[in-house]
Image (cartoon, rainbow, N blue to C red; front, side):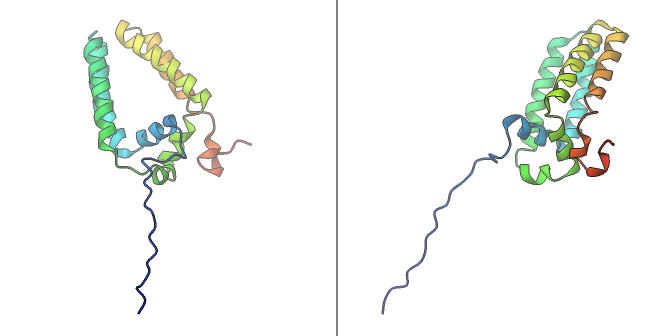
Length: 146
């Protein structure tokens, strides 16, 4: 009797999805509901610290909050998140035009919170919201401009 031969397949592990860039992977993780709610809770404290001029505390809270929220969602699957509406919106915001408006807006917003300048806060929030205007057709075809 001949011994039974088995096919042995090598196991190759992929540490993370290579389909998405680092920025896209971060955006996808940031669209996870657990991270959104955790970041919102930390964000309230960051805004409070900035308003009271404690920028060191605000920076510490921000960095620690981002690290903790990334740990909370570290087991998430990028491909599955990308198929959700939140994931599609997150990938939409990685576009250069959207990133530009968001970064400029956050700069004005932080400046306004530190200096209590209403106009700077309004410019910041407006710029952030304008950064959300472009590319919605990629989220769903019904959002396509005519």
